[in-house]
Length: 290
Image 1 (tube, rainbow, N blue to C red):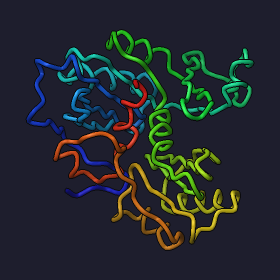
Image 2 (cartoon, helix red, strand yellow):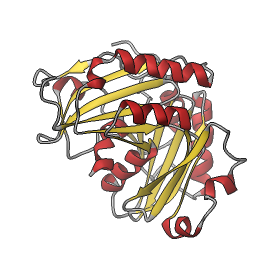
Image 3 (cartoon, helix red, strand yellow):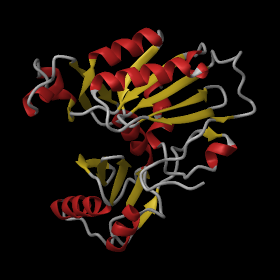
Image 4 (spheres, helix red, strand yellow):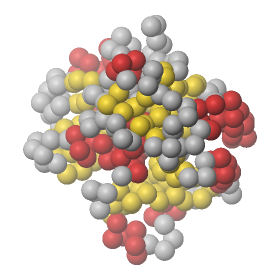
């Protein structure tokens, strides 16, 4: 399969054991980003993903065009309208901020509004309580998009795309030493650093080239006094070994490796054939419902 630098594999994967008539014990997991919609079906009893599909959207759309594109894609995808036990929708919205849970309880006006220039007329604030972090993730939510998802998926819930990512990494990270995870998506990447099993650093950076990726990774390594030759860096998301992005940064970090899918789940054979570091937060979404 020939892939461009910034795209993940496309095509619908449906396991031979998937039965459209018996989906009430399965969860639909869906992630909406500005450039793509990805979904997967998770069979709860077997703890197995049986369906996966990614659909790319135009990267240069105005808000109304994006909303219409999302509605068009969801309307034509038959699997999305089957009766599931639950639907987990993750949004890749910005801005966002992670704050201590104790502060969130005291804050009546939301930290996000204090740190940012404010929300637009068509946005509200979403809040996810981050189990295992004693923190709350605040983020902007498009009201019309949220209303559409809530009306389309009656038994659905909405979280931020960082929510499943952080929950899964909290299980994966070692209890000793420092480790850095770099989660790459089109135009942005998120850096997560753990020190002795505790979250040390979390931030997102704009990126349009391998040079941008190298600049910002080097920057936060310097800020945190991390050793580029000794601190492990685990790559997740939309980056591949054959890409110019990887070739640009790889010589500058001594312990770089691609991550693997969230542990504790089963994946059908075609999903296992995908690069193991792709769609990490999509496959971690069931953790948000547990």
